[in-house]
Length: 159
Image (cartoon, rainbow, N blue to C red; front, side):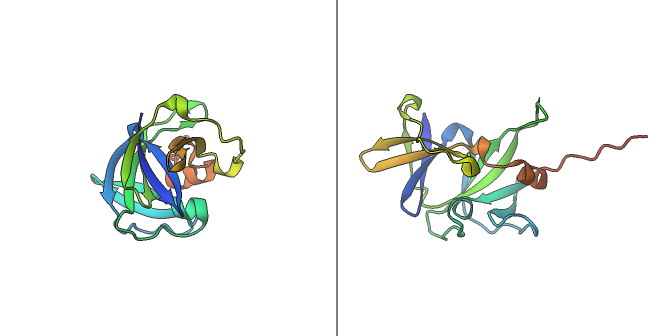
């Protein structure tokens, strides 16, 4: 499998390239008042609004650094709601030091052994010559409250 690697405060993380739609240089997002601090805002992509998550804010409680290697990564986000498949959406992720890709076999990843109920998106880990890499599970990133905020369901009217 191919992964995009990035860093947060020296720790390395990986996004499955199969989930990635596009990678861009970072540009400003429109703020969403009332959203959690780690919801950086909205970007327009091909005429459609796309919610953007700041991974440094989510993981470390601080905004992403504006490095030359900080990127906006658009990823597929599919969800199930009430047991039914919801349409696939795209969300943006702000990631720091996204400078390389790496092929890593799925079987090499192992459970970290640490439960992270408030960070379900932290997946298994693998080691290489430079240390550990943790797989980010994009599909586990948004809790129900944030999904409702970012992807409101159309109101149904009964007559």
